[in-house]
Amino acid sequence: MRAAEVGAQVILLAKNVDGVYDSDPNVNPDAKMFTSITYNDFILKDLKAMDTTAIILCKENSIPICVFALAQRGSIKRVVCGEMMGTMIE
Figure 1: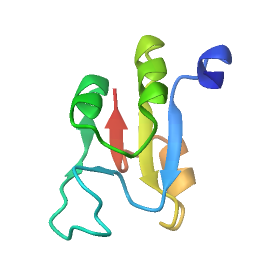
Figure 2 (figure 1 turned 60 degrees about the vertical axis):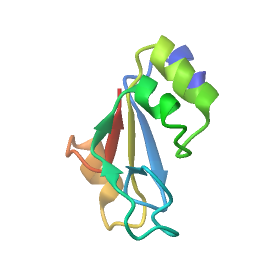
Figure 3 (figure 1 turned 135 degrees about the horizontal axis):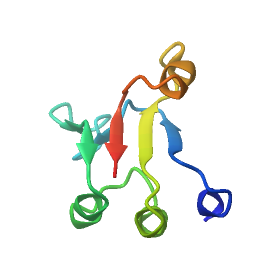
Figure 4 (figure 1 turned 135 degrees about the vertical axis):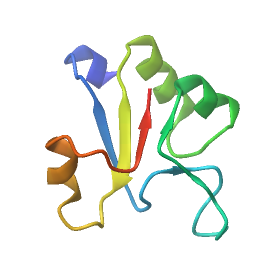
């Protein structure tokens, strides 16, 4: 909600994994990472990278979400400078 209030163009979501997966990659070694996914597909697949209410608010306000790994050296700078990393939810 705050992102919409301040007119954010994107939400950067730094996680302990490098993107959004179809299942928990820490539990399932065969988990598949999405490089991009729609808000609707995220909800339909019942993915757990973030709260469903937050996804709906982002969808309603057309705010994309970039999910990436915080632990990768320089990841924040790389994402801010426009490098595509992780998963883009749009």
